[in-house]
Amino acid sequence: MDALRIVMNRADARELYPRIRRATEQLCAPLAVEDMTVQSLPEASPLRWHLAHTSWFFEQFVLAERAGHRPIDARWTYLFNSYYEAIGARTAQTERGQLSRPTVDEVRAYRHEIDVAMMAFICESSDRELERAAFVLELGLNHEEQHQELMLTDVKHALGSNPLDPPYVAGLAPAGSRAAVPLRWLRCDGGAVEIGARDATFAFDNERARHRVHLEPFELSSRLVTCGEWQAFIADRGYDRSELWLSDGWLARTRLGWRAPLYWHDDATLFTLGGRRAIDPAEPVCHVSFYEADAYARWAHARLPTEAEWETVATSRAPDGNLLESARLHPAPARDAELQLFGDVWEWTASPYVAYPRFREFDGALGEYNGKFMSGRMVLRGGSCATPRRHVRASYRNFFVPETRWQFSGLRLAR
Ligand SMILES: [Fe+2]
Image (cartoon, rainbow, N blue to C red; front, side, top):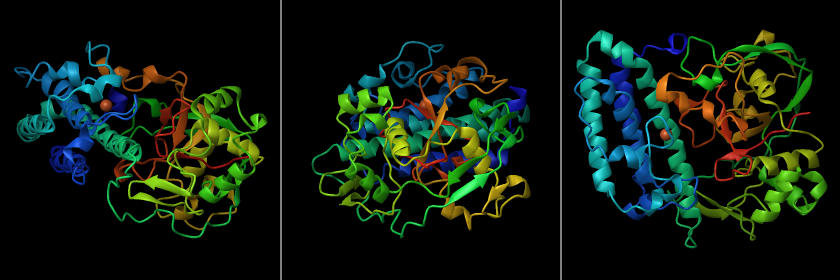
């Protein structure tokens, strides 16, 4: 794990740990206890489970590694282990919403006990001990941020499945209430490019090793596909024309009855975390599957970008938003915000989720974190409006099965 280890120092840990843990709890502030126990999809989890599982992660991978640690409750491993076969048996994911115990209050008490023990560890352990745990501590905080996004995703589905259309936060402003900027094509010369995380920053194992890829010249759309454009796709019978769809996509569309993105209603409204409102034609389309994104791209006489194409464009910008000399992009887009690369919607790519050359999974049970999912999933890039800002980066590889719609997933075009 040496090349992957980033030593989070004591001062960083003291500041970051409580801040990120608190942010998780603040996500529950607008909710009633009942909202936190619902599981509306097999692949989603009740918020109470997220609160407990993220705490269990620190207990299992940081505290339990210390001599003399006594489990806070040995039964919690069975309840709150997500998918680690090396750790043992657990509640089926599909049954997380069937348990009324432990209560939300008991889970909050468990979180508190973990936080007290973790802060004691962060403040009082020896330099050597802290350094040994630094990577897993950083991983635990990144894991917590992943679950923060999942909490918003899952609670949106729970509330959006309710005929009362209860908002998560009433009066939330629409994210896309601006006029759609005209679509432009950014031309990239291609050639030999490097993708993947650099050694000096925190990244998940699946973002490494950084490696060379050859790209043919390509063009990438300067912005995301909008709801207005999706309405045109629907009006042109996009959901009814099998020639636009991959075979598996057509089967999924038929079996699942897709006629529009998830959360869209027939009266041109959609459900958002702010409640139900009119569809804004300028906002990025969201909650579409890979199959729908792929069909749309074909309808638009384009295709989805590969993840290497996406990352090449995303890393062609310096932090100040200026184009880097090495970018070979024409014409230069005006500003980063205009490109919508980060923090709007996750962007489906045409790339299957597979290992990079020289991929090496995390050590021990944490080796199950990413590597074992490298089959039957597609890569998404960029981060969504639900992704914590600290968590967004150009090399980040999100991955879901192609039918997934409950994530904040949209698309941009390439050709
Ligand atoms: Fe997890």
